[in-house]
Image (cartoon, rainbow, N blue to C red; front, top):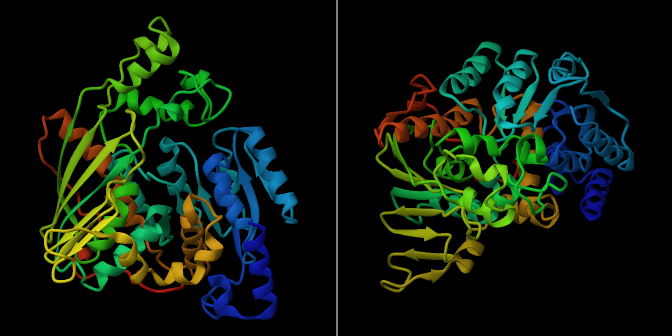
Length: 450
């Protein structure tokens, strides 16, 4: 962290724009030199964004908001130790964030709060004219998905979905391969969120990732709010980590779109078994009926004829994996196994280790900033997602992942819920672009700026 901060300061002083952060080069003559940034929510995720913002010379943190005074104190301490001015503080109640949004000293806002607050806060931020960064997932219902799009179109204010996996090093290398036609014409994808979250959704009420079987009012951190979704909903409630990178590869909302979805869910056993094992069969939570199936599988069809299988699996013991597979007429990449096969180059019916391929097609962003991004969180991905947000906000231009993407990707949640409720019945995706996907050009992902 200190090395990255020193790097930024030295390059700024030396005036070597291209070697520094994007604001030192790409924003010159096109927008603000400094972005006045506020944070709504400084829990674990919000604090991560705060840490990265404090390392930028082009960001001034003017306000923070959280209803937990402990998180406010921690954030203020970090800001002070970074040698920055104290921001205005909000958090008197759940709606105090609206007073933050009324500040003229705020150009942009990053929202990192529990899911049920995402859309309403993002709407209020756009209505207030603040360039909006929204954590995933963006919406819980189809109505909320339309709210994001309609508010963006009503106000002209931009929203960026802060999906960091789009910036993962291997994902961007494969995207580079896709754009260079290494795999040929694209046909099929697999992705998802496969992550054992039992120790996150159930804890001891004292430590965020501690052992225990409490949630809700007796829990702490994400277990206070996230677990209730598993109790009440049978849906893929967290689709964007997997589907976001795939959407970029097949140009969703930009020459292509999601057309329909079918979903199925297994029975629910994982959470109950974990509670019994760690809390005993007489623990009150052992009587809770978790509605969400342990493994939820959705299949999406696109307008251009591709299929995408999306898996949600967070209640069972398993190693972490987003399960990526990218397949075309000439070959494919599979993350599980770290393997690639390209016809005419790989040996027939044999896999290549992906390492050499990923190094060959390493993305320009990682080639340029990789050394300075590695300490930024999530293997460096958080460095790039904040960089894209700040640079887009300074120029007040459409971000790489916009309100239409936020709506389309998040719509998987309510559509999967409807499909599961109706025995896997296909569900039509709304066209959130209102037909504009037909002529909208793909975003230029293959560049070294942001």
